[in-house]
Amino acid sequence: MAKQPDSDSFLDMFSRFGRDLKVPNVEAILAHHRKNLEALERSARAGAAGATSLLSRQREVLQDTLREVSDMAQSYKAPGNPQELMTKQAEFARKSFEAALKNAGEVAELVKKSGTESIEILRSRIKEAMEEIRSGYDKK
Image (tube, rainbow, N blue to C red):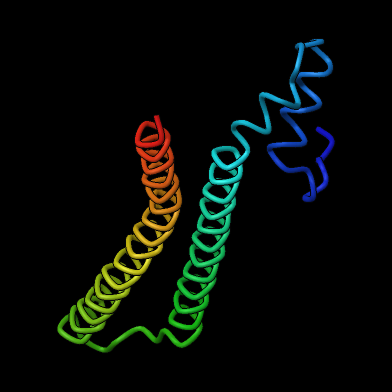
């Protein structure tokens, strides 16, 4: 699939779509909804940036985990007795569990931050639109 240039905005895409479908007055319609489309675009970009951050962090976590497992495997020496073996296995399990909890917390925080930022952009635009509507009624 061909990648679209990053400079294409929602307005450009809707405008092109409207012209392709020969929608009358598409530019006037877009001008009327410009602020809404711009807010939607900012929200989508914030969500995409959050997804990128999330994927990057998950890749880092996976690399760190694989490195730790590899280091452990390379430094592994068969213990002389079963008690030492159990101690080493328990220590590895504890470290793995703690790392998994920490990483899950970081991922959850990234998801929350991304979602909050994206929703806040839309919430702000809805508030502005409601104020615009109120001021329009007050003038009449």
